[in-house]
Length: 128
Picture 1 (cartoon, rainbow, N blue to C red):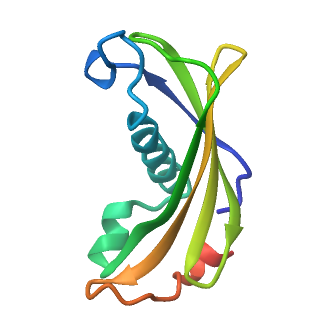
Picture 2 (cartoon, rainbow, N blue to C red; picture 1 turned 90 degrees about the vertical axis):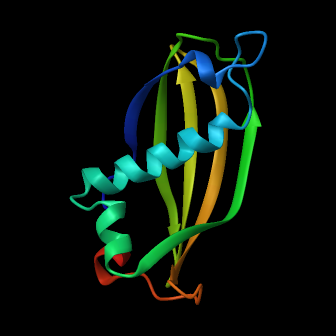
């Protein structure tokens, strides 16, 4: 996971908003998952192949701080970076930006487990 920051664009869809056309707070965790998945893909791997190998990444911790509202049809940039890699976990940090405005920031820690839910060491290609 060599690249320090990975960016994707997200266009806010109507179903992601509440009655005021603002992004519902829970959707930021979905955006964070999109960032992790696309960062993995950018490094030549897919989460599907990871699961096919019998491994899974489960969210052990998640946080999100809201700085400004995002609304229906806004074009957001999600910046994802790897903050820390341990033997069996990865901590990611996120920024959701609209133009020059930081909309939200957050972190997640994902842990590698097998199909029985037992913690497993990350594959070597994820540790480097």
